[in-house]
Image 1 (cartoon, rainbow, N blue to C red):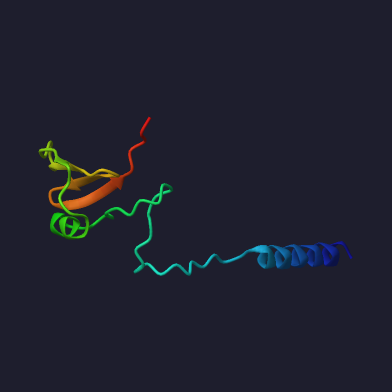
Image 2: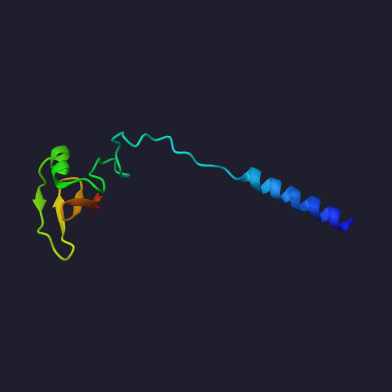
Length: 98
């Protein structure tokens, strides 16, 4: 009788755990250009080339020279800063203005 109770309890716990799991599905269309920051600033994304950044966002207010190996440079725009490795975007950030 103990074995039957234990088996029944194990089956019930297994069933409850499998029911309580949920799958998260994102329905966002990755082709839409939405603001990619909490400030609502649309900015370049990782993998874009310098040419594409210039086409989409225009000339930056300031460019820094490449430093280090691999060469890292920055383009400074009014609302964001873009970091490049060689000529590819590795990150873009919205600076915190105080």
